[in-house]
Length: 170
Image (cartoon, rainbow, N blue to C red; front, top):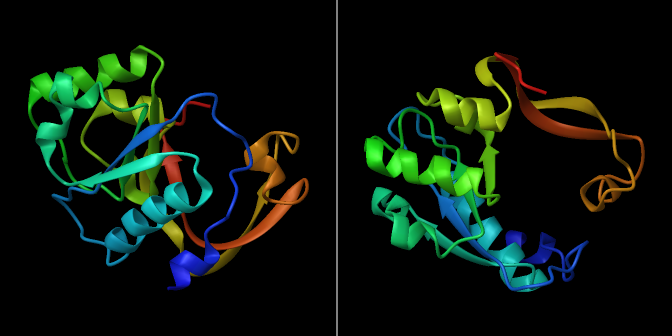
């Protein structure tokens, strides 16, 4: 109920075409209790805003080429460990991203054993000295971008658990 209430009624930007999002929540490492809530939040936001349709899965077969090609983007939802082990499926995802489709990583998604995905996500998470509940200030570098507009200014205070990164690819 809280997710439903908090989800926006309208997307900040309207897609030109319908979008389909794979929310992948397979875990082989540390298991965060928030994983099912994150998946449901992404489903509800898509339904309520009309921005996309979310397919929730923890099945690595979703990375078979014919299945993966049904999507516009993939979200790694807290996928600690090594969520996609098959080399063919890994290659399919790399080709998917190279073709211009999207990849989003939530929380420890940047702490998986997959160097090419780590580079695509922007860095390897090495630790999180700011634990859950810490309040941090984000500098919004593009306040006119629809995502930046949601933050309401050039800076945004947010409670979160923030990671430090190595191999940071800005």
